[in-house]
Amino acid sequence: MIVGLQIGKEKSTGRPGKNYMQLLGRQMNEYSLLAAYHCNEIDNIYISTDSPAIKNSANKFNAKVIDRPSKLATPDALTEDVLTHAYNIIAEDLGTIPEMIVLLFANTPTLDFKKLQEGIKILRNDPTLDSCFS
Image (tube, rainbow, N blue to C red; front, side):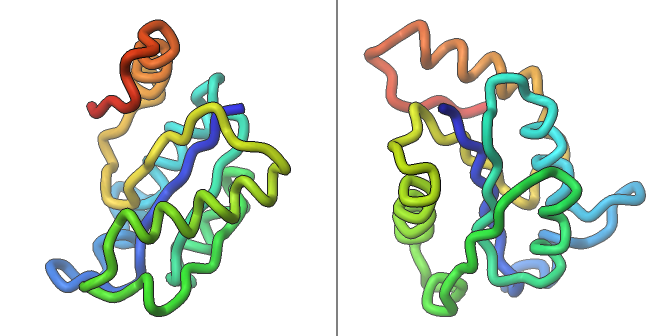
């Protein structure tokens, strides 16, 4: 089972509201969700966030919301801690450890589902790899 996991928080210090600002009629975070939704290899989509605006996108893409604790939504919070928190909730929710987690950032509107498929294929075909980036 392959899971798409979007991470994005309410408050951004560099550009406030960047994760859910409108871009061509969609919230910014919806573009990576759209790519995951159309990627045939991704079985489930989760969103780790503290943002009400980002949470509102979940239903459009059959995504499950992981409520991010406030301590993981600060400028000092480490991404690895956010990922560990989400991973534990995903594994418990699924009742199994996912084969792969595809990390989706809320502020990447140029993500294409074909790139997701290509990355998954690369990882499946080369067991010496544990991650890939576009």
